[in-house]
Structures are given as C-alpha cells and as structure tokens.
Length: 256
Image (cartoon, rainbow, N blue to C red; front, side):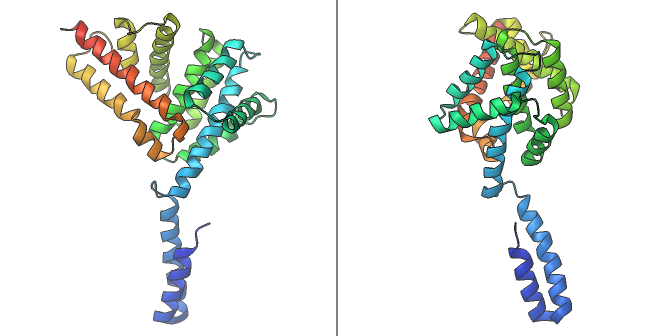
C-alpha cells in the first residue's frame, strides 16, 4: 500500500499550518498516492499485471478447453505449444500447467478471474486484445470452434469490455491464421491475408495500409511488454507482427 504522499503531506502541512494543514496535507498526499498507484510506468504495478496476465491466460485457457465437455489432445498440445513459444523454464512450465488445471476444475470462478485480469490491465486495450487472441488460438486448436467455446469466448469478451463485432473480427482473423498454420503454408493465401488484416477484398489500398499499421501498433512487442505483457510472451507478439506483415506483403504483391 502506498503511504509516502500522505506521510509527507501530513508532516509538511502540520509544519506550515498546524493541525488543519496536516489534515489538508494528508488529503493531498492521498490523491498523490492514488495517482502513483495508477501510473502505467509504475514498476510494481507492471509486475503485478504481468503475473496476473500469465496466470489468467493459462487458467482461462484450461476453462475454455473444457467448455465442450472434455479437453482434447489437440487443446492440450496447443497449451504446450504456447508454453514452448514462450520458452518457459521448467518452473514456469509447472506454474502454467497448474493454472491450466485450475481453470479445468469444477469450482473455477471464471468471472472473478476475468474481473481480476481486467483490473490488472487497467485501460490497456491492446493487452486485453492479446489475451483474447491467445484464447482464440487455443480454442481453434482442434480445428473447430464449437458453439460452447464460442459462447464462452463471447461472454469473456463482454466481461472484458470487448464488443461483439470486435470479437467476430478477431475470430475471422484468428481462424485464417489457424488455417494457414494447419496447412503449413509459408505465405498466406489472398483470402487468408485479407482476413488476417481484418479487411475485405474491396478495401482500398489506403484502407489496407491503415489496417496494417493499426495491427502492427496493437501487436508491437515492446509496447505490449511495457504495458504489462509477460516477458515470456514477447516471442508470441513478435510472431503475430511477422504474420501481419506477411499478410500485408501478400496483398501488396497481389495488387501490383
């Protein structure tokens, strides 16, 4: 708990104006402490955000995996691939597996977990977006996003303040990305490239470029890490930016 501002405000207020000054100083110091607690560059807050992001990512992933009644081998393998992408140490892998299993348990409180995650992320929408993308990637692991998973993901988005139209766009983008990975293509097909950028084939060159720049900004690894993305997930963010760039290059070459 922060108290430095209240202490200093109270002391200086008392020295200047006596008892009334002390009360006024404590009040002003309290406001200062609250401001520091919400400071996006506060190292302590960033560390809390990173820890919450990590544990919530794997707990919610485990919960979604069980949404259709059972956890498939594909979903388990996807969770392991995410861990491999993050290059986790043995200790961190153990923590991730523990969180995944916690999410699968019958007494897991999804809404409480989401509320904690939302509070930790504050107003960093790109962090929340990255969280949903990872969950969608895991949900598509078995090749199909079934109704139970879709309904749960829509609920998660609503709880985190993501509108349904934004979720549908993310679903199309991640679906295209998943199809590309399934077919082990080196480059996206034109249809997949447009879906990854979230634009239609009828979009103008300017609209395509705007979508590309927006997505690159949203997925910039350094920006995400500075806002609370766990360092271990930087590699995932880098792969996302590479995929977005390749999709943009595919569309540019197609339009030459």
